[in-house]
Image (cartoon, rainbow, N blue to C red; front, side, top):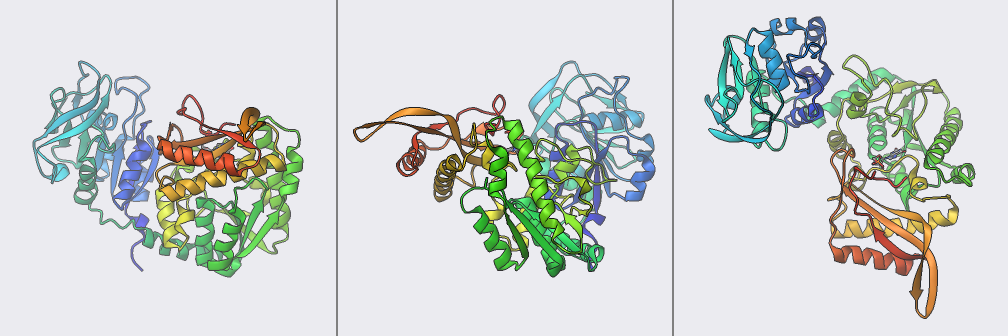
Length: 517
Ligand code: XMP
């Protein structure tokens, strides 16, 4: 068997950088496995993990501050190559006896960087290249054993290398897209300095993960909760590949799903994958629990409770179930404070509606917990999941209930579902679906006046919410062509009974959120 893709590992020590995850994603894109770890990870633990290289991230602190986060100084004696970025550079220089002088002023934005040595870290990089600076009160010049490799007008030591050790520093951020040749610099560090070969490939991850799942699961039975979303579908497909007939999938139809969703899950998992699929038709139970409820958090709470009850009831019927597989991803692990030493401690609660409590009594399997979303998508395609599923927009656990503002009734859900289906169909047909991150219809809790033929109407209003975003923490509204918006609006009012007005939400997040509830 070939070497495990994660045997070639880079550790990123996190000093609180806003770009920590971005550094990790860039490295993964360069086909090298990496993990974000606490900045104070002990040198012994690092030695055990045998990384090929260490990256010290940026961070908001100043190295002069008394409580500034530091790393174990013995890390520099392990003989492992180190790349310090921004704060990480200052810290490395300071730890190795370099003198770090404060900057005269803060520097933020693009700068022209002149390269002194076009080899090593800068092999293949143009002599003058734009870099992105983002630092406050800190290093301009490092003295001692550190050699300057590059400079900008305001920063004579924009990049540095230790005279005798494989310790490098960059004052700028190679990971952001505003540093156009940043990927080349990171690649040089990984491949030339650390000697990586690029083992992190999704097909080898797949074969290694399948092998380890087979070994861990043995002949026991696994339950997979399916939501219709990307993460749970890829988890299920992966388990089906590993231990096929020992997998039972549970899909709770809560009656709050979009048009055609149940059928498409059924088609994918019983057709191509021939899974033991348990679809629980629980719409009536959810609707009953939601009767008269308009408060969004109360909707979430009730849906969460009913979901757990329904899931438990169904799981009880699956004889001999020992494992429960969940589609936890690496960003969930990072955001819940997980480290390289442990799986996710607790997943973010806000997005955990539709999640399951630990007390269900199963042993948890989280085969995607090292992957970023784009890697999960690649894995999904590799496993043969249809593109329409792999590139699906996220859909919240509480489903249409939080898009049906005010009370949730079967009739209101019907209106919303039809309008939403038209919106998605038009986006897909026009090629806009893949250009947007999330798109949906919202049924407002008001009526508006209209005219149809000779008569006056007093009907529902549909709002369209369509956003662009990379991380869902911030988002911008999508600038859809007017004629497409017009077509969507006309189709909705003409064919969805009970709707006489469509409005477009042009608010960014913040201050608004993506969902309306
Ligand atoms: P907001 O509305 O907070 O949404 O800007 C950010 C992302 O989270 C999704 N979202 C949820 N997902 N359960 C979920 O599983 C929820 O209760 C929930 N609320 C919001 C939202 O669809 C968007 O992708």
